[in-house]
Image: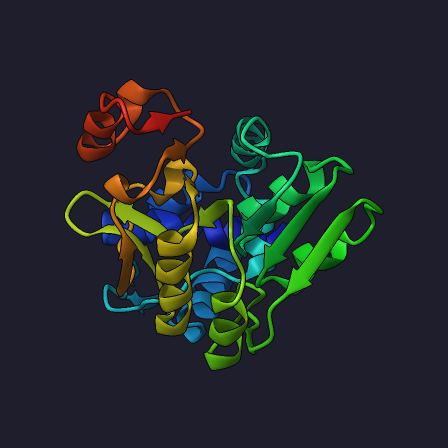
Length: 253
């Protein structure tokens, strides 16, 4: 519960730039002022914000994301909606790339036992899918990012270069009309770019909390994908994504 509450506070301060204690107590009803002080202290130690007199201020230059365990708890209904939609694009044969991240983990949990080759950079997803006897799992090597449980680096790049990919399911940490789809780690951005170039069919999966969020590394634009899967209706999308939904070569699910 502490992790969920702190992530709510972090997201609120990020969205508004600053927040006072009255706003934070309204955001977290039933929580004492002392507890909010402690939450802000923890978030400050993690580099997400700065405590100021009467409240907190967002650290605009911070490029990271909340830890995997926090993100996995948050937004579960949205992740389930996205995973259900993605299942309709899952081929019963060929090679499928599944990216790392909490949305992808929700997707992996719903994948049935079918004859397919799955390639992933996420050890937790590989372990989840290893329980399906018919699936063949290929896990890249590389250096693990403990924040989002993904492998990247030269070893991962070399491994993925030698694999043909029919369908790629890609995650992102943020999307903004001005910069496209972004992530926070340069080595992971390189892998995503390569997968987008290699795959015959490309699917980007993101929940609406990613809209308007910008991280340092852009790896793709809406036009690079065949499908965009979100948890909202097309009319609720950011402008560029809404316009993309009208293009005949791109489907928004």
